[in-house]
Length: 357
Image (cartoon, rainbow, N blue to C red; front, side):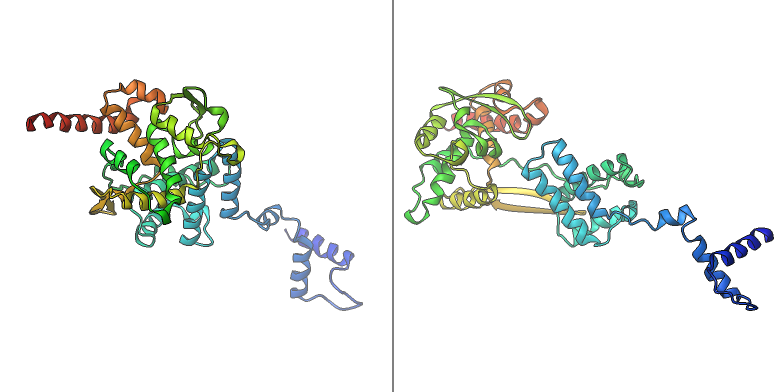
């Protein structure tokens, strides 16, 4: 060891790293400084440690780009992950993977509940998205924190209410006379009714093109599930197509579909005007707190209610579930069961009307 240090000092002198003149002798401090300069690039571990690190959020952006492209994400999916990124950034601006230990994940759940006032069902969706990202990062070697694998917060949830229009409500909405100063609602109603009579999702109606329309049916490949569907047209869906057949829309679209958010807002306005006011009871949880609310149906109506309306009313008419599934693209009965239960209830209530005769 002593010999090694002597050789280092000799080497320092030779390279002129310490200013030695004549009889002067370097002080211990000068030797330390020169020795440090001489060896500052010779330690590979130190060099590695000084490499700039990629931030958590930059890796998140990398995930969005890669998985979004590979999985053909829709705009809706990008928006969900964008919202998650915002929540994570506000939770902790300099967030690291190490922060998301089991305790850190629990803190994030508490943040979403207490600071963002989220229901348990919404928190569950955020954690599901976060798991996707963290598992991707683990697989890619971007971090080594596997706490997410065993993280399953206990979040109480009540079954989600299926919001749809009965035949009576559907006819009431269709026959409602829209005021002259609210004619913008007419096209919104037409698009919504089209989903009620075809079972199409908003995204598929938005992308529906003239080439998809045949004489008596529609042929499409769905946006969400990439299913190839053939949906026969009935007199109600045909009449709506007929109304707009001579109107030109950009990209050869068939119907005047506006943004999903705006359409949801207008649908609520339209349904309120048409007095779709049936009280709807909902139960949900925030933490362990159970909350029961009663809301008029018009306030809960959105674009997806059109597809639900089609399914529930088709089943209540006695159309077999396997036939309805051919139109909607559902692949198993599990997804259809909530609708089948509703249809059974509708039919039971309808049978009771005989008791009034």
